[in-house]
Image 1 (spheres, rainbow, N blue to C red):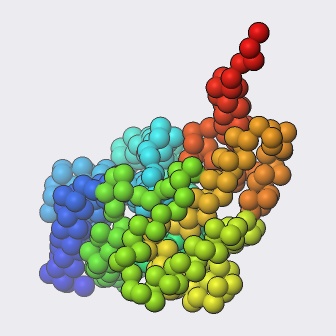
Image 2 (cartoon, one colour):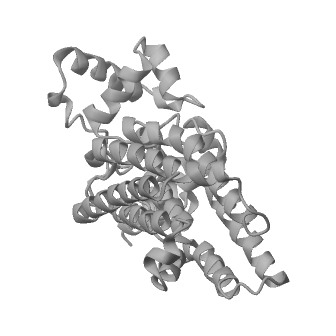
Length: 362
């Protein structure tokens, strides 16, 4: 491949990444958008630094680009997790992969060719693999219940194309440390980069608003509040009728069915699954079917746990009656919404009721 074609492909891919990153950064609507912008900008550095002619083009600045590019997998890992998990928050353990890669770079950059250099390269690659497979796991685990069309499509892409390309790229880079890569692979690299970048940008621009809701706008009905049919007016008359059918079924206790999915609910109500997804997402504002279910399940759980007449009921039994397969998912969901475990919540509510109870006259 001629240098002119390679420069055109890499320049085009870098320009696309830069444009998308700036647009997402300017959006500034959520942490997810900012992490996405960081990923695209770091990818831009990788596209430039991975060129065989990068040293001639950028001189000593090529090292800076290479170091920044080394954290692209971390940026993608954080971006994908934030995208797949509504109300995602960064925590200190999230810095561990970046710390491992930084430590590997301090060994690899001198390139002394010794044992530590090779070991650092292997650890670096293993860290990237671990993050990619974690993203694939998260993408597949939440695919069924995802109600956002663009995000659901991205889960499939993440679970197939992106990890495959990333693994091939990482493997080639590791192999290049010990042997010379075939010319065909070197020529294909900028072609693949441009193709993937272009497809990613088209997807990112099409579903921009859908993926990055403003902070605080995510739908999450507190357990004590019923599901509000607040957006039903935006639906057509037939859609409102079907949405009412769904909500009536749920209010009659349909949410207590264990293992309930969008598909099962649609089959039971004779509503196509894709249509049901649109009704819940656009009609009620929920981005995840689990959140929709929990709005009913946790509301009833709160009522049961605050009832003195049911104070002796076992937590595991409550979880099973509400449709949870075990007590673990129930505890996690309840604490995520209330900040307390079911046991802590029950104790607090009963103690509060006892304080408010009228004291017997002497």
